[in-house]
Length: 403
Ligand code: LLP
Image (cartoon, rainbow, N blue to C red):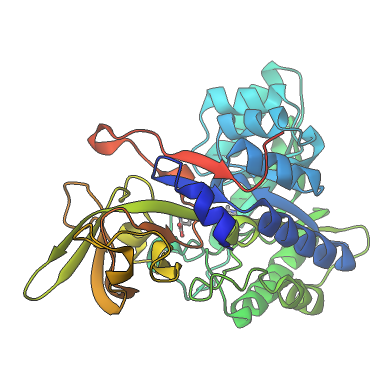
């Protein structure tokens, strides 16, 4: 991902920033599009993973729809060229204003998470003389075997409607006249790498769609959600295995004539296209630990602190041949620089003990001013940044000029 020219370019840019390799992004999008088209599947990009406008424009150009979780995401999707007929609005707590915005935008579908929400959408749609398309999000009680903070499909989770409530859903759907039932929606979690989990999901979806058909509803859309994981340990293995993923659904999902199968992929489409680039501010050598204090922290990339997530960390300056211009700490000859391996705790500048990207990272001996890349940061990175400690908004840099 980083050739000498790229690293050279970084030296003139103020850190920290997200670096987007648009080529990696396009290759990933192309691979997903081709694999999904092979099976006739529809993919909506889960915008929450990254709503950077340059990313949205690239995703949209590959023909994907948009899966939005706020009124603002709905508006941003449409502003960035996603057709309204390909916009889905999900989320457990849609406000009246957000529902109204989405009704005004005439989006394709609301993924609905409770009977009460169905009633509110019906009421707001009636006031506008509109009919809202809905899919019912059902909690299939399938364990995604992923980090418990990003598991969503168990009975104990706040998401979706549990199967024992389906009779109430059916009654509401029959009664509410400004609602059009389109289908059923599921999402069991994120960073799922075990394809067995998706097989179990398919089996549950088949049972639940039969239940709806048996109760007189025609299920046009089967929305299986997102969650396909990426390989955080090998950041240069760029393309997730979309083929194996879609194949599971084509094999185990009981797709009836005229039905559409929808997916909501976020992470798998964008994670590998970006790295967070920071500089070493200070090197603290202790008796027990060596610390690299970076100018980026949990305010720029929260995942390691929130989910104990692994991100590969590289010293880009350490990749330079010794003597290529980096002065040794004593400011004498660049040829005296020592780049033998050292273990560091790589930490940020924020006043919180949890502000640590990783402990005991093997890196070449590092110096103040070295450029550090924290890899596979394109999903849930920039979008989860904050200005805690009144930090500046993190900037973005792209591998090619932006349109
Ligand atoms: N659909 C729904 C209803 C979702 O809640 C999510 C993600 C997705 C689709 C997209 O899932 P993906 O394909 O990206 O796995 N911040 C966490 C991940 C939270 C995921 C939330 N929902 C992280 O950094 O790992």
